[in-house]
Length: 506
Image 1 (cartoon, rainbow, N blue to C red):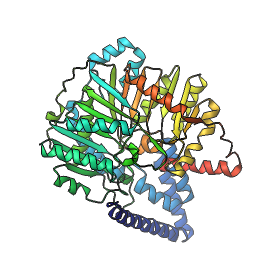
Image 2: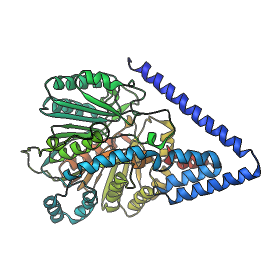
Image 3: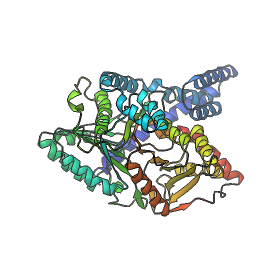
């Protein structure tokens, strides 16, 4: 690959710089820890104060527990590392920029009281669930046609068709870009529209594309008339801010059509190349009012880091849609910079409200205590809980972490299915034929706590049946996990205990 060498050179430079910093902190810590008893007492007091700060910090208890254990094991090193990476303060510049853009764009958010009243009359239980997102500024939408694609290779041609139809603007936001057929075809389509005078903008995550794209890739696109920036450039500095990545996947055309789901821009996502067997993914296409909300999501991030003074009103004109209403939907986003785990709460609301069944796609099954308890409780109440996970892992240590949760879940009655043909990268759930969610959220700590994410909840919409059909077809290609006894021994259980302890920090 032509991008591999510069990308690897940059990665090696960053890796060496980070290793040097960690080594320096270890040496300094060991130096002071081996001094007099007075210094050791000061270090102990410092570690106790740090632990108290951790306890009082808002956030996930599992993450706090991992930090506490780490600080107690290595008092000075752990305290220094927490100061650099643990709390919200190291992310100050990200938080301030995002908050300022969201505040500036807030006049364009608002309740849709008419849609809310219609949903309440249709199903009061779903109305109650929708109020959570409504109060966070994500309005309930109607007048939107949704189409579900059970694979990247089915969705990508539709994405290109939407780009070709653009008259005013095209906005894209992806976690990973990788050189290959998919990126080449996308670049060609975007360049063509830019030459026609269409406004084209792209955000990609710098860490997500660290191995695949050269630093300064945006300059190449700008020469083609495409505005572009890498989100949160990955610097060789130990900082919590470097852990907050843009994991969202958004394509919006003219505030009329929007796509979101699991796929990034790389050939494995459309099965042009094989990395981990067949790549099972999913995408939803929205045409109508729902697309406007994804336009606003994109502009929040764009205005935070690229064009702070832009008037966004022209991009948010209400799209004309002749298809009529197909149920209700709520596009939403999640940020790691506040104390609201929106993505997890959406899942918890569905799991806790399930009466008959809930089926879930997730590449990584590393739930925190609340999610684990909710899944187990639902199964114990007689709800049919099925979770589809990869049969071929992309990250072996993460796959081992996933297995460490099998025992508790299966003993409670949760059914786990391994997709033996390959890797499941699809994300989302379907519940009771009345509510579903598709987007970028995995059932792990990274998605729930550390990443910028997005998704769309559907209520009483035809797309729910499409998603359910896809999940049931996928389950037929899976193997139900029955044997989780291999790690019953002392060493196996110890290994899993260690993995579960460090999982919140990964």
